[in-house]
Length: 405
Image (cartoon, rainbow, N blue to C red; front, side):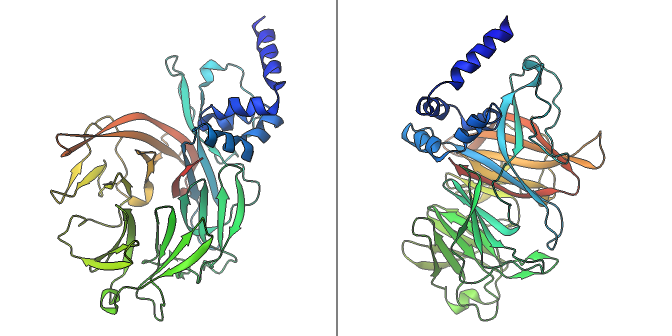
């Protein structure tokens, strides 16, 4: 009897006109769209339609979504995959799942979560069904609903090109963007050269190149997605550029901070002004740690097994409190990624699989933040922490990005 009723309800929903169904789907969190796309070809088409996202915008339902790119070693023979966060009922609530759903290849599958009647939902990274091939690229940046692949590799010589593509995260389709003025410098077999970094500031993408590169005409190129134009940013003085390799850039409080081997620089776009900042200032830190910025506060692993935040007044790193139940993070920075997830920290890290030796587990924790004691302390609240993906050991974390759709 119950199966007949469920079939009848499903039929009634499927018979709704597109405009009504789009209005209903627009009110559902985008986290459930990968599951809804499996209902039928019609649902798959609607969940990837531009009309659905236009309706979501009109209803104020835009939300931040996580995208993860994993990659196998090597820069001549790329093997990479994109995944996005999905939330779906656990298997205990669906005793007859469709074994032919085809979400994952044999190399990438959801981690099997032990049966727990009190667990109502399951967080998973599911493969992104891009409508054309995912290009191998040098680095990525996210702004609005798009992910930009910067320095696309067009051949197998190990060098990135000036070509730029972007992934529309509404339709999951790759498109061409205007090329950069020049390709990012790279060393074959070693990958991207130190001193070439990317940040997003006020919706614009800033690509900072190696200031020690001979004949460099511009330290920074800036791309405005609204105008679709790459512009060269005026260089700092020659004294600023001398013998200083840039390791990382961060957008903080409307400024672009560049962290170098010998000193740090800050660029203010509104004033088109450069300034050298000494090592005793508030952003004295180790620049190669996994880091994200939320409300102008830096959060990092600081080569430790937990998270820290930077107190700009006390000029000191402090441990983020309230994370006693967070599993220990890897000490190796290549195995951890952080991102601003709509004002929360999303942290991904690699873990060993105790059952299958040639596989690794990809963990994710989402942490809400709270300032206390006259903003002298920051507390984190773990909203959830799960193994969200199982991959072959040859794959590792490459890019973790948050988009607004």
